[in-house]
Image (tube, rainbow, N blue to C red):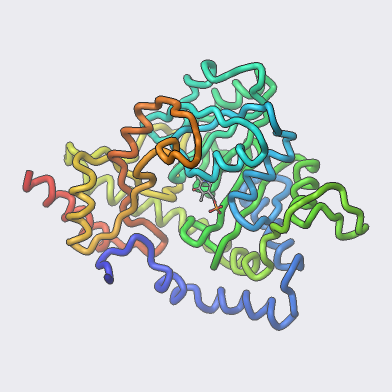
Length: 368
Ligand SMILES: *Cc1c(COP(=O)(O)O)cnc(C)c1O
C-alpha cells in the first residue's frame, strides 16, 4: 500500500541526494577501496569532529558498538549494568552477550532514564551505567554523570537514536563511550547496517579497532585476543560521510517539523506531544513519539487515512519469554508500550504531510 504520508521515504531521499551517494560509491569502486580504507578513516574523523570527541571507530552496527563498548570497559560475568527498561532489545542483548546482568530502571515522561531510580538499582556488582538517548533526546546527564562519578561506574551511552541532540551544548555520544547506529532509518542512515563508537579514551578506541578486525593489529599482524568480524563497510562509510555533510540541516528540518506537529496538535487533550520545555536540552527528533489515548484505534484510523505510523515497542522486552529477562515491574514503561505512537518524521517530511496527519488525528478524537 502506498501511504499518502509515509513514515520515512527512502526513495525520495535517494532522489534528493543521488549525486552525493552515487559519487561516494563510485569513489570506492573506481579506487578498489572496499575494506578498511581512506573512506572509513575520513568518516571516523568527521564523525568524531561532529560529536566533539577525539576519536570514532566505525563498526558493523549499533549493536556491535554497544557490545564492544561494554567489552572495552571490561564488563563480564558477575557484573551488573544499569540501563533503561524502555529501550530497544539490542541494548540489553549486548549486556547479556558479555555475560553480565542488565538491571532495568524506569523512564520519565520524556521516555528517558529517570535518574531518581539509579540509587535503588545500585549493588556491589554494578560496573557500568548505560543511559539510552531515545527519540533524539539526550538523557538528563548531570545527575547521571554525578552518579557514575561517585560510584566509579563506566558511562556508556546508547546514542543510537541520539545523533545531533545536545544537553547543555554537548552532543550525545560525548559524555562517555558513545554508541551510534546508522541503520537505514536512523536520522543518519547507511544503505544497510552500520554503527560506530565515539570516545575520548585512546584505549577504548584501540580495543574497539582490534575487536572489529578479529583481534588483529593490521599494522603489526599481532593478534591480541579473539575478536569479531565487525568493521563498518568502506562503501557504507563513504555514503555516511557524504550524508554527514547534510546532517546538521536535517536536524534543523526535524526540529521544524516537530514544532509544526506541536502547534497542530495543541489542544488535543487525548495526545501528549514530546515537548518538555527545558533549555538544557536541544532535541534532534529521531522520532516524534506521542502518547495517545486509544492508541491502537487511532493507529488503524490513521492507516485508513494513508498515514503510516510506528509503535516502538508494543510490549516490553520482558514480555517475550524466550529472552528470559525477569519482569522489573516498570509501570510507566508498560504504559508507554500501550500508548506510544511515532508519527511520520524524516528529512523528507513536509508541512503538507504534517497537515494531513494532524487533521486525521483531530478527526479521530472529534468522532469520540
Ligand atoms: C537502532 C538501535 C539500536 C541498535 O542498532 P543496530 O544498528 O540496529 O544494531 C540500539 N539501541 C537503540 C536505542 C536503537 O534505536
